[in-house]
Image (tube, rainbow, N blue to C red; front, side):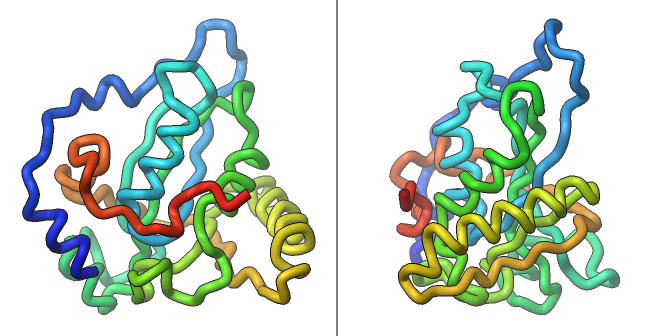
Length: 203
């Protein structure tokens, strides 16, 4: 948390958000879909998805946003400070718009697990609190079925052999609130800014 506060005080470089968005291909017949994940500090989560699936390279991710979800129903339009206090119970999350003909929801869920530690409750690295919990917020019954299946597969292959248990929540997506502008694409604007050490490829 201290590292993040220091990072917020650092200067940022201008970034053109259009470079991190992609239009749907005219050759696709699919409608864009939404995937929503929480796995710790949303700066690093957004950064690693965009680094490995750059929209400009037409790999399936069309657009992303960081924000807050999964909180109390009476906590509307929360601020970063309120979310960090834990009082609203929101998770820091990333919303991903994707083309299912280019990348499947299965692939996104598996990549989500590859890029953080899903075995720690309300914690990633030194970041602790409910806002840093591991969660998949599904948008359709089909997404829930995929999330359940991929979770079981990842558990069996990568964590059961180590005697560890995935604690990721798999819950229906609710109200979404965009985070403040300075959080969007934060690590692209601030390449030396704070990044949770768990946000890397684990396998």
